[in-house]
Image (tube, helix red, strand yellow):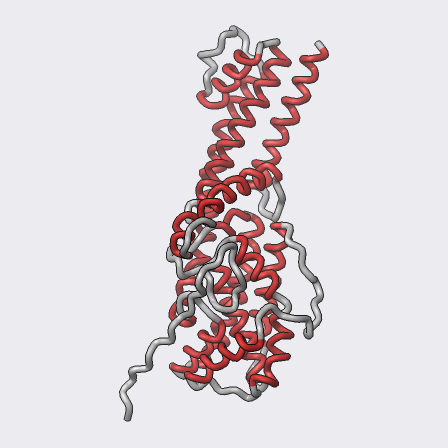
Length: 363
């Protein structure tokens, strides 16, 4: 009797724990952590990452890592169902006194096939009915979860795709300003920053509620949602650093929304960071790399009210708020190796976008 009580307690803990995981992952519309889901997704990610780390090019790594999120979702569903089967088997053994094999058969029959007719007993218990309801409920919740997930993914990628014409592939902050200067559309930068302020808020909400979205990669290897956000934030920081007379509201709000988004994602993933960095804290981005980006802007005639030497402290004061988090996340997800985006897990060549040649007729 003591053994059956122990089995019943253990089974109840397993079933209730997995129900909690399902609710936290699929139902509750706010950032909630499920240890079970996190473990499954980390195991899947590390398995794919072991293969990707042995490949020589960023494109090959992107092809290997592309299915990670989808496989993690399927593996989580399978893990839930198997855990439920084990939990209900323990409850069956406690209530009905079955041996391990019979208990697993009974719980699996009810959970996966609504198999009341296959039961070896004339009388069904409440455990059988609970197990029979659990399978369809969990599968139904997962199926209903997918449109929400892919809807958030599509909204995210729409802005990332639109940015390609404005920032190149992969996107880069100085390239944003260079292209806007080239086509004489600098006044439209306010609209860009306004759109990305809203985009950052949407990504913060969706990617903290459904963290698996962080692992969803863009349709093309040269695109990446995190690198796109970093490029817009760098463009806003450069704009504020070089052009103090221009309206600062949209650029400031885009920066603020961007690093708040990164901090929310860091909190979800357990990444530590400095909540109040000093403007003169050191950057990983060097001054020489900064000058390289400024030269790209100058080539296309971007107007600068400050010299690079005078603008550097202002740019550094903005970038210190988000650089470390952007670099850490870019490394974790193996984002496309763009300029000013930090190192990756393996040594891969940095891909620099090319500014289109201005072929407008003269005169």
